[in-house]
Image 1 (cartoon, rainbow, N blue to C red):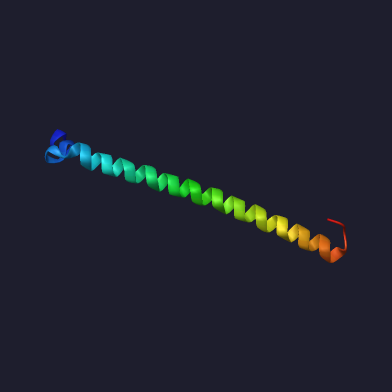
Image 2: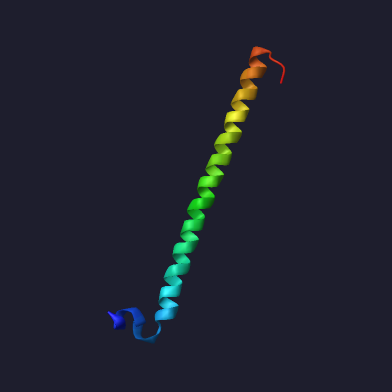
Length: 59
């Protein structure tokens, strides 16, 4: 097991690369979810404004 983790002396590089990749993937997922929430909020606001305008209600 120790030999597997040390990766022939390159363990810090190998496991660091895996760790950085996981961190970046998690950040990408977080950013996409935040962006999705923002887009849906904007669309909802646009629908509300369009509905008000069609009914003749003041903004």
